[in-house]
Length: 208
Length: 208
Image 1 (cartoon, rainbow over the protein chains, first blue to last red):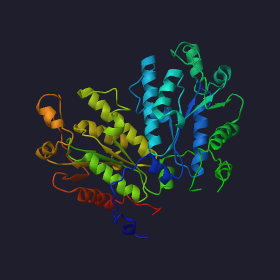
Image 2 (image 1 turned 45 degrees about the horizontal axis):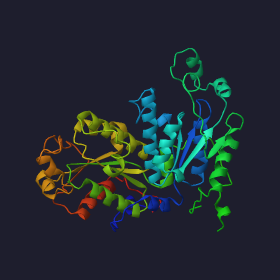
Image 3 (image 1 turned 180 degrees about the horizontal axis):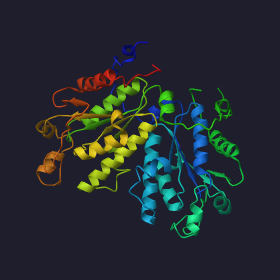
Image 4 (image 1 turned 45 degrees about the vertical axis):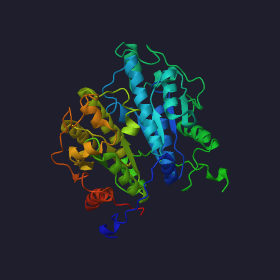
């Protein structure tokens, strides 16, 4: 095909609002926010990215928000004070909401240690579209893994207010999904999440 | 088809990173940021939404960021001081960059009056993917339209630092596209933008 043939020449026009409903129809599935929470080293990011891969390969439109694309960009002006942590999660909640409104299954992976902050996000997104997934690995397991060497630094006092050591982690009281990422392997963890989403008919893909 | 048949049961797994390149392939087209700038009343939002509709109806994956979904959400903590305006545009630039990385043609409509702020966004997004569209309606036309009654309030001193009246608008020096939204009608304005995007082969949609 010649390049010219791919040009948009037939401009269609109906003064429609391209809203979430239309974008979900286009993508062939519903959009939701899947919010992973848990201690550092509990496997949130690994699980989020594995879930993302599985859903993407199945033809669903997904995106992951995590430290890699948020901390050095949108939230690079924020530190780790209580106020800044709260603002960090608020902004991520707002961005997750925008992505959901764009018809995308939005997956986030942040420690997000405080119940009040997570509940604020639930309110922004809307409770019916917010799937809270608690990565419930025991702190002993997380500290033993110490994937990023952060627990060691926290124990040495080199990191202040480190969740689980010198700052509290408030476990979800009524999360949609609990995954024991301390004992389950990655595949079983993904299956547990997908099993829930299937049960709730949240992964119906009309284009499949 | 029964609901059960639509469930995701065949979990595929390859430890892939689902990056921008893969998401662009999935959507069948490149992702870019189309950044509209201009005075209040210059027609940025109208043009952005019309362009969005045309591209959406052509099967492209698009999303609009504008005052409607940003000011009362992500940036609701910000006012209109120089510092807050700068932070407002920075955050929007970061979010636009995230959407682009999700494979989406991202359309933004904000006054964004300062060259330095727009150039910062150009740097965040990457110059090759950043299409600056100057909505160049004369201020007399914008003030005459006064769609939101803001010029009247600004003239009465009820709004401080209003762009074009009591705060400068720095026109782009070298924008990718200039649209004279003061004299062109909406259809001609959309055509001008699409003509540029076609010429640069930025709208090739493999799924068309």
